[in-house]
Structures are given as structure tokens and as C-alpha cells.
Length: 112
Image 1 (cartoon, one colour):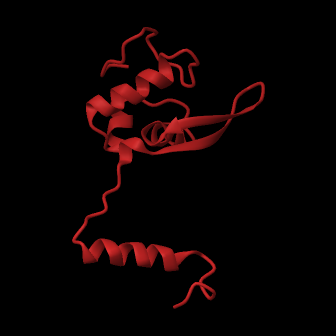
Image 2 (cartoon, rainbow, N blue to C red):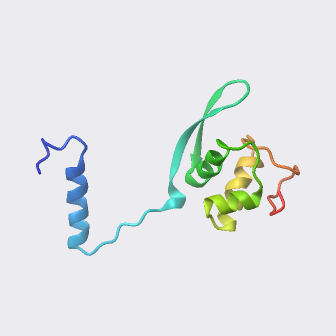
Image 3 (tube, rainbow, N blue to C red):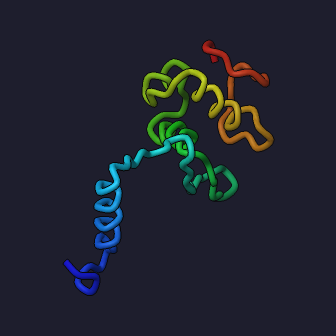
């Protein structure tokens, strides 16, 4: 396959992977370093939210239901408790609260 007949850029990806294999390198995905932009509808208007991959997993759960408990989010995402608490803390207790937490407070507990 040559570059001219490859519209999606797979040529460069294959060349990169072949180079990795030649030098016995391993390519690993860093999930905690990922980020994305989500479009969110709030009562007054739409907003674009630039969030981490873990935060986006949590927010996408709210597309199907209105309320979720900590344990339901933990089971649905499969995140470790420390990662989940960190993501929920910034979403529910930060300067701009994207999700509402019951009971109100600055700490995310398992009973929330």
C-alpha cells in the first residue's frame, strides 16, 4: 500500500507500528491522560465541557437516568474508588458544579 491510495492515513500508522515491532517496543494507552469535549444541555443553554476521560464516562451515564448513587456509578464505570472519587469531586464539588450531589458538601462519600 502506498501513501497516495491511503486516504485515512493508515499508511503512517502501519509504518509506526512496524517500527515499534522492529525495536520490540510496546504501545500502551494512558486512560488517565485522555480528554474530550462534551456538548451539554442545561436549562438555560448549551455548553461545551472539556473534561477528562473518566469524567466523560460519568457524565454519559446521566444520558439515560436522572439520578445515580455512588455505588451505581462505581459499578457502571468499573473505575477504582480513588479515581472515581477524584472525578466526582471535580464534577460535583468544584467551582462549576456540573452534577448536583446529595447531601451537599465538599467530600464525596460512598453514601452519596
